[in-house]
Length: 344
Image 1 (tube, rainbow, N blue to C red):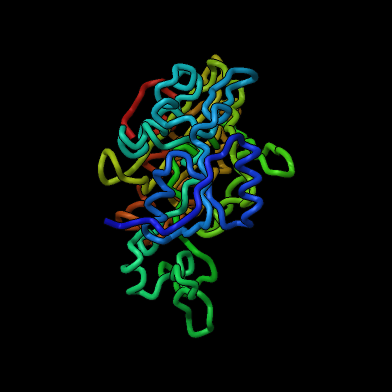
Image 2 (tube, rainbow, N blue to C red):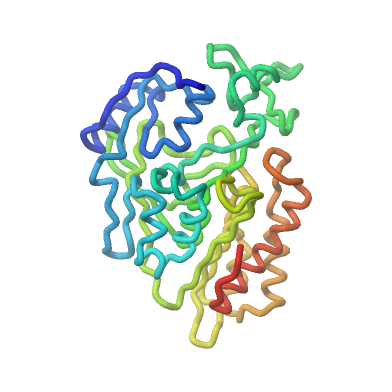
């Protein structure tokens, strides 16, 4: 049995109490909600906080409320999210993405906030401590005893995926973030200094180590979705080796608003698991004012495939994964155009 390292445990009495605990420990504290990502990381010594702050039980983080759109608490489970009629009806991409994460057992525990902030993954990182020690570690997960990662001849820490690169290339593997980005989501962040709200796109950076812009003393409390009418359609497609359990090696979220005549009035396509952050396809906006024809879909799918630059650090060959991007983008766009659910 692999055991987690020793740490102090604090059961927060409120969001502000949790934020204060984070601030008091200066980056050495971590939040615990579902724990489906954090607990395995602790056991592998990828993360070794001195304090773990429990927040799953906080009622203010477990609510889904209507208003101008939908506000979803960060501790709402993925199972509840996938089954929520409001989400299924108005934000189909999110419901589908939440329902494709891992297995029913894990979705009953895993939370939306945890999936949005999911740690980046890599074949050289997501291994036991002893396995990583055998390769002299990597820049994302140095030895837990206070030593350093393997270094290059220049003295720089090594990313085994791209040894000459100065940055980490671990992959963003969240399913819900691409869907939320396609739907125009924002997030609320609370710290001891106050509260702020940002577009979800601003939460991510394309760096396998510093993949979140959220400060270490901030608690992500809610995801806020704008009101979307019946003219909007959305979906999420996921590629993985097994139909359950596995993380995505490609995620494609697509959302579009159509006129009565079928002309695109607004569109967003987002790729997951092909970079250290979810990638918004900027060429999506070029289809505004046009019908979503097969030719337009083909051209946009090619643009998306050109944007994707998967690395050799997850399942399947990277060249094949890049080619599949075009097929998955085309399939997702045809689904929202035709209003016919397809497999993906």
